[in-house]
Length: 323
Image: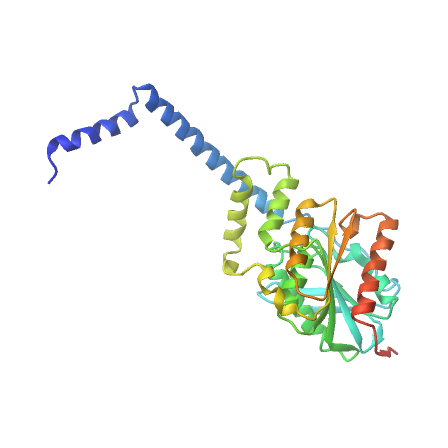
């Protein structure tokens, strides 16, 4: 048992903390209270911010496919994990030709990339577009590529059952979130024969950081890291998922085009690092403006020509003319 005199200093410390009389004790308590308030406020704000980020404002594609050129078919498939049914548009090319699946970016939708669809279909490719969770008319929240990869795989599995496509020859194009899902799927799916990746990132946390900074809160202390922790908690089922760069060597022999947008430096640098780590064959393109959906008509035409040329050279549209 400790002597009674040993307890006295400890009791004095507790008493001083509860009823501070010395200046340094008061200063310590004030600093602690401010720090506690800052951490609490940062956690609350970042939690609300992450909620807004993972539930982007949705816009449905008000387009009548009956009058749209290209004779598109409506294709439905079931998204895994109780995510419900997805509806996509299949634009036929040559019978038995490869299929290019276009994966829209965060905050976008299939309706915003239809001119890219037309450019590819004009060169006899089969083309497929659909909306990810929390985009278009689909409910839910985005995971910035985790569950979106599962949606993409379900779409490819459904398309591969058609008798008018090559079931083992797919090309993928994606922008930011869509690019991550395309890359993650390609690393595990040998049916993917060519990849065009615009503003791709290594982990979904990088998109959370981009979202915080675009909301003007990136400069606040601990805000980015707190938002990343909140996102990680929401997606704790994927806590052991490695960065996609660790599996890039599985894509030896698969042609890859990495596109960097100068006006999006955060993702441009992430894409550049991915290009450096990727095995051959690979190409790099640097463009002044990113986000196909918001490009000017002239920029879109240049971009479309770059994407079409890549697929024509790396994944030729050979097959029989569809009847």
